[in-house]
Length: 265
Ligand SMILES: [Zn+2]
Image (cartoon, rainbow, N blue to C red; front, side, top):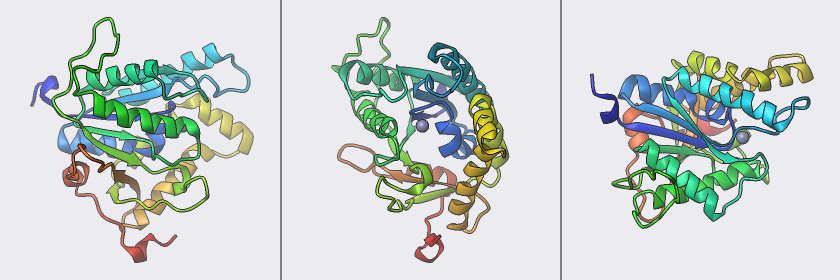
């Protein structure tokens, strides 16, 4: 067994508590189980707007604990980026905090939101994480942290998860480049999502059915069908200048590519 510090790390850095569970937890579980990765989950906010009855500080505290509980099912660490819901801004202090989280996590693979998504918080987080990955190896990018983390040795492999419902803001489908088979880890992914009880109960009260878990599963089935499996999670790789170009995630997990025929909904 490798020492903990020697194991490769996957960092899922998303906007809100429960986004990782909805978008990529099945893949995180497979990286942990099959490729020996340590899992770190980070969110921009602690979900302070996610309640109709509790004050922002009250629901934040609850959702922070829910996010920790979800990550704990993968023996993972959880960090919060210190933003507030609806106010995730691309500015210097935020980028410094995000860079510090990337340096502390020391990931080889980073997963964030699609650059096009239904909510600006998601799009801003995507841009911030993209920049944090770029800046994390540059020692002259200073974060003003009390005890700054060491610069990374290289830019990590960066992947974008599916946007919510697989569409951009014009409703146009965004097709996945690779789809990870999560049939075996769907049960664990569902348990992780169920840790976010405050959100699940809120939706259940509104709709009368367990829409929270069902919606996640329906999307997983859609992506799964595209590779002939029960459940899948879709990703696209960031391939801009200076970022790693080889598909490490696909290689680690033998991810499938959707065929044109299978991609039709
Ligand atoms: Zn979100």
